[in-house]
Image (tube, rainbow, N blue to C red; front, side):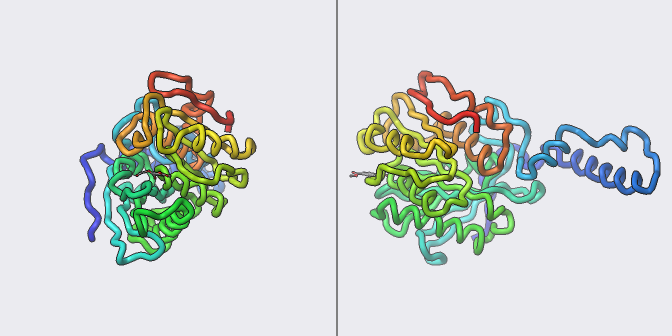
Length: 315
Ligand code: 856
C-alpha cells in the first residue's frame, strides 16, 4: 500500500533547514577560502550559530529546542505519514503499521517497535504512532503472531519487527539502524524487557504497565523507563513494575514512573504523562539528545497525575 498522509500536523521541515544549509555552505566556503588565505566579510565568515554548534555536537538531534509545552502537545513538529504492513508479507511477527516523519530533509531517524498486550492488537497502541513519529521517530505498532503469545515471544517479535523495519521495509532508508528502541503494553511490556535483555545494542526500552513471571532483570544494560499504574489489578506494581525496576542494575540508566489514579489499561489511550516522559526518554537515549535531560532530571515531582518517580540522575 502507498504511504498516506496521516494528519494535518504542522509543516514538517520548518526548523531552520534553510538557514542551516546556508550556514553550512558559509562554513565550507570559509574553510576553503580561509585555507586559501582569502578574507570574507564578517557576516559570511561567522557561521557558528547555536544550530550549527548543536549539530556538530550531536548529529542525531532532530527538531527545534523542546519546551514543556512541546513535549505535552498532541502533535510534534513533523508531519506524519503511515503505511500498513500485512502479516502475509513478514515473518517473525504479525505485521503492523509504520508511522514516520514525511520529510526526508532532516536526515535519518531512530525507530521504535511497539507491542500490544495479551489478546490485544496494534489498535490498542495506535495513539503512540502519530504522537511519537511527529516528534521525529519511525514508529512501528505491531500485531503479534497470536494474541495469546507470552512475553518471551513478544520480545522476539519486537526484535523481528525492528529487523524488518531496518532491512526490508519501504521506509528502511529513513532509519538509522543503530538507533532502535522497544515499547510494549502489559505482556508486551514484559516483552520489552525480554528484548532489551536479548539485544543490548538497543538504545532504549519503555515497558508500559508490564507483566512478566520473571521478576529479575539484572542483565539489562539498555536504558529502561518502566511505567506503572497505581490501580493496576492485572499487573500490580508491587509484583511487576516495581520489582522489575528495582532489579535493573543501578549502573543502567533507568527510571520508574507510577501513574496516579490509573489502571492497567491507562497506556491504551492518549495520556500526557506517558507521552511527555516517553518522548523525553527516546530523545535522550535514541537520539542522544541532552536537550531533553531537563525533563527527566531532577526527577519529576509527584502530582495529581504522578504517584511517584524514581530514577538515576543525572544520566
Ligand atoms: C491486555 C497480562 C495471569 O496473567 C493475566 O491474567 C494477564 C492478563 C492480561 C495481561 C495483558 O497483557 O493485558 C493486556 O491487552 C497478564
